[in-house]
Amino acid sequence: MIIPPYEIDPNTGEFVIDPANGELIPYEPDDQGFDKLRRTWFLKVLVDVCQTPVAKKIVNQNRDTMDTRQVWHELCEHYQNSISSKMRSQELLRWAHTAQLANSNHHGTHQSWITNYTETIRQYQALQTEENKLSDQMCVDFLNNSMRGTTYLKGVLGTYYTAS
Image (cartoon, rainbow, N blue to C red; front, side):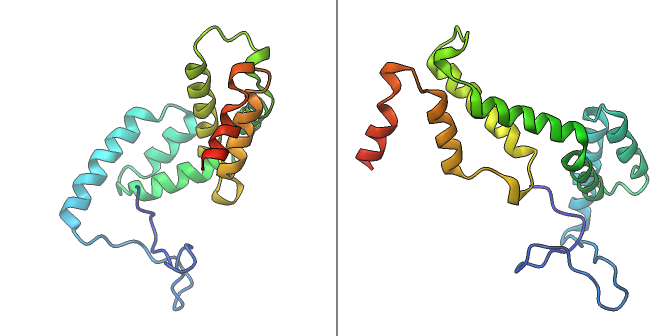
């Protein structure tokens, strides 16, 4: 898990604001030396991995301070709110909602279909904020719908629920 750049209130999960000056309170690690090594390594990873112009700009703006928590925070903010992420998210959800194995041109195994389907759901969930994520039951319902028309798999979910 990547530690956020600011202190978090354990009760609300939101950043803590300093009542004296109204600013967010920066996170202070317990082991400064280890934290510096970790930030140096993670900054190198971010420099190597970030390919888009916006991501490179965010990384380069924080290169001197090596504040990788702030970089990660800004990257997440940008990509969760970007138009392309929203469009990709809608595309993934549309596919997950409408795809059906019986009507597809899928030539692999049923296991590979399910693996691909769950990867699509994982990608969708990664683009969402906590309040916008699909519930586990919705994911199961979408997967069940994708199997509709596959005759020898249609009773699997019912058998699973009966056995539970």
